Image 1 (tube, rainbow, N blue to C red):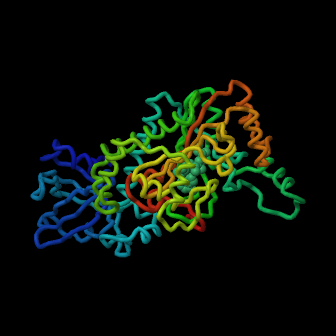
Image 2: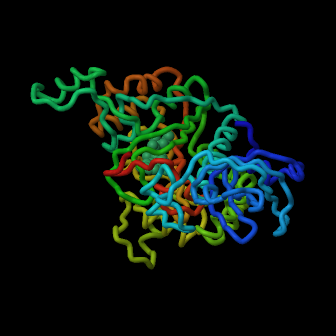
Length: 457
Ligand code: 4AD
Ligand code: MG
């Protein structure tokens, strides 16, 4: 179906005066005595294209007007009366798909909660048009950031036999339902598809490390799965995860890459999505553009976990969870640090080893590990990473302390035997950075089909 993108018509003046074919869905329409107007959107742009209908030229326009109707319009592009905006004087209109009166998006503004009940239709609203374009531009920026710095893009397996984070949040993968014919779990798993326990990967890091130990610098960009019961504004059971892994690198290097990457994504989105950022500044977060510009101009803060605890203990705030050295920082603590103390992104470093994963590099103090979380105002953690333990004996000790089954991690342990080097990486929650850049507060509104506890379709 030969036609021109609405984005091209709106941005390329050479279309003015030309006869063009446009397709799209009716967003709104207005009928007056001699003329009628339709705001048409084909998804290529946040802005709609106004179609002007001279009623004398058409027998009956009523089938063109309902919201949600899909139209093909042939007409001439002209400069409109208002703001020099381009519009199209319709000559022929055909209805590609009708939209009866029960089309749910008739009202101009609806709530995000209401739209969550119809993920298949909400993409036709301005909010989701803008969210998904920012998401797309950001994804491409991430690839370009790594590709232009000699990283190799790796696809790590989603079906896995080892739990990376060890937090017990893995979805099980099985082809046989539970049956009492098995005497114990071992017997049951032995009979299953893989002959052992398997699950959906919570992180591609362990395989990412394998790749980095030959390719030097790698990144993954794919889904991770967490069977977390936490029903919050920032958790989904299936999220998109960006995980670089870098050989010959220490914690400082990891922090440097994370900061440059975040700035690179933001700078690209500011440049390529000006209409979307204006939209989000108007309807979602006042001052969003300034916030993003500030990020580009300033260094992120770096704060030791131990100092963070001191700050939180002295804080004039009513925390639900008390703070002591050794405790995991809760969202309320993370937000206090990044919003109240710094009002900018903060890398917290050197966490107590007992609250972090087995693979993290043990610091000489014997108490902490070379880990970092990047916290941002409004959200809290968007990145978790660390230098990895490259010493075989220390790694084995940490695994045994946690009662881990070493057989499941044979490849990973082998990497420390043959040419082991200092290395590290991090995981960025893609949806979380989209929330940060758009001001959209609920993670369910930045992913096409959010999967959460009790909710899948
Ligand atoms: O902090 P996490 O658990 O770290 C890892 O998985 C490491 N293996 C990463 C690495 O070093 N390669 O997860 C990393 C990030 C979090 O900071 C968060 O942004 C995101 O992944 N994340 C989630 N996003 C949405 N919903 C969830 N349930 C998430 N769990 C983690
Ligand atoms: Mg984390």
